[in-house]
Amino acid sequence: MRPSPRIVAALAVLPLALTACGGGGSSGPSAAPSVADASADNRAVKGGGTLNVALNADPDALDPSTSTTLVGREVFANMCEKLYDIDAASELVPQLATALPEVSEDGKEVTIKLRDGVKFNDGTPFDAEAVKKSLDRHRTWEKSSRQADLEAISKVEAVDATTVKLTLKRAFTPLTAQLADRAGMIMSPKALDSAGDNFGTAPVCVGPFTFASRTSGSQIVLDKAPDYYDAAKVKLDKLVYKIIVDPNVRAANLKSGDVQVADQLATTTVAGVQAGPNLKVVAGGGLGYYGLQINIGNATGSTDKPGPVDSALAKSPELREAFELALDREQINKTVYNGLHEVDCFPVPVDSPYRTPDLQCPKRDVAKAKQLVQASGVPTPIPVKLTSPNDATNQRLAQVIQQMTKEAGFAVTVETAEFVSTLEQGKSGDFQAMLSGWSGRVDPDGNLTNLVTGQGSNNYAGMADPGIDDPIKQAAAAQDTAERAELYSKAMKRAAELRGVVYLYHNKYYLGMSKNVAGVQYFKDGLPRYATAGFVA
Image (cartoon, rainbow, N blue to C red):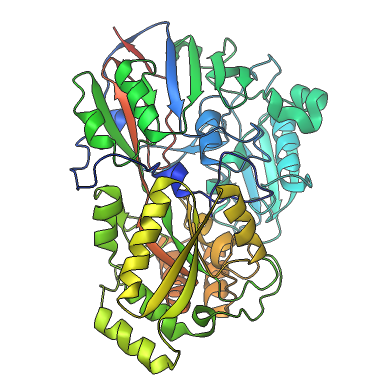
């Protein structure tokens, strides 16, 4: 499910270390930050200055075609604009486009109007040919991780300088949402021609800031972009991203003033940062999720045909139900995360317009779990190997799961590894159960298709069921929101019966900031935007 500090083939899986950033601190629950989002702070900011931002990991290559990390998306948000974006209400809005796409009646022709007079950060003109070049690279380059995002496109045409027409193989309503992420990032054709496969070492896009330098494992420097079409609104001279992996050190650097912003605070450090007289915490995120995958059919690889898996959980849906019933999501949230995430058992957020109200979560029921275990006839305690990334918070989560399921008759053995290794195990099917998560997309297709449908590259559980695949495919072709919601509901209910993924919560992200910083935008995608940020005048 989503990324690590290093790239792993075409994966898009995110460790808890990159979502909640746990480790250390107090274990008792604390109140969620009172500020819902940073956009509420509209204080005037002065021009100039350098904003130092602590990142919780070192991004992979800064190439929109190959990037797979959430932390990479954080950097892109300030130097690589997309055809579309989301706003504070999680609505899709034009960015490099001038309006939402015009779609033909059969849904197979999509016309996009582009901004005129825009330049890339190397001075190259932005036009339809540049858009075509980037989209074709995203969807056809063998090294691209965007191929699945744009698979529905069969042809890209530059109609004129400010118009692009996309011809689709089939109607695909989620396309606009895909173009509001890395698949919609447009790169300088001049830079692509000169750098080729090495574009990520010195990326050039349209954006408020332009890439200046990178020191691996240390920092990434962005300068204010002089050719940006809305340069007057950009106040900062420079953004310096400092890589500070340890969550306690990240919080300490914020408190000392060495950095003025710290991303993805550990839930255990939120209260301490809030207590600082010159600091504040704002909340974002919520589109993604975290939980555990149970291998039920990934015998030889997530993109191969499913096959039999030799484990008690894989063979018995009833045992998987018992395993889930032994878990107390509310208690996990309080014990591991100080109550700062949003408990849920489905991949689509509760407040999504694509979420039907009949999707409800089971409460913990140890008595029923024991009955299911006894009825299975499998000798107890039933052994389960749980693979976990080796950061402190994931290990704590694994231990809580271990203790809860023990009461129902399971004997969970926790096996930890570097996050990259857990991804490799997930993709190859070399696991029984594994902690993993996904950073989330505004359209539910982005939380489902590649993660729970047959042979999806991130479908580590190996689920392959027409009751999941068919309604998801139908929903992608439908345009009515209510119709799509019903179809997604049908698919998610079936997936909940199979329990290849046991969802635990939706990730909330917490951004720590100096009180003299304003103008930051922080939405449900968890990507801090600094185009209008600066120091208070």
